[in-house]
Length: 171
Figure 1 (cartoon, rainbow, N blue to C red):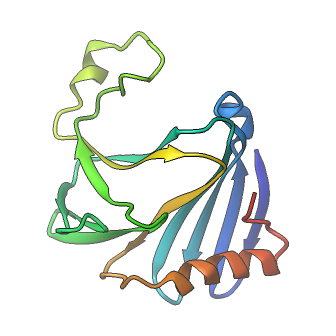
Figure 2: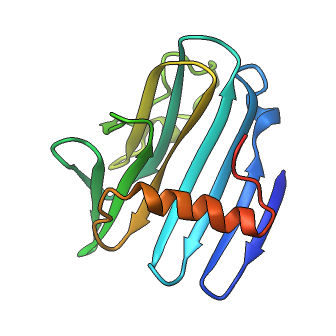
Figure 3: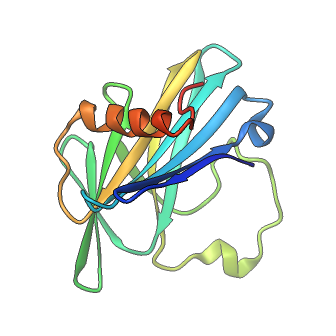
């Protein structure tokens, strides 16, 4: 459910409580969407308090855009129809993107997949995969038409602005 929302002249943010969907893996799980109208960026911030030690955490998105990863994997460039979208990681140190085919993970629950869905022609997954985790986890991505330099203050600003509007973005 939506547990917070605010729209101002320069930005908007919305926080979702994903805890019911991840109750076996996490004590709490939240996703915050942030639109920065001045910077012309969007961010997706995931936060969770994990139940078990040595856990894995995945953040992923599907796209039919061509994906180019930076050498260190901290950002990806999505290209489609002559346009570019930069996707920059944030969260734990050492976090990096990878790319995989759009198939379920081996750990995913078995579900019946229709043949058409299994094909996904031209689609790839852009993934953040964190391992060996326990306790609090925070990761996500910033989407922009230009490269966002590594700036931890930008992510703190997202949290600060949402806190100003009584949208708690910490677990």
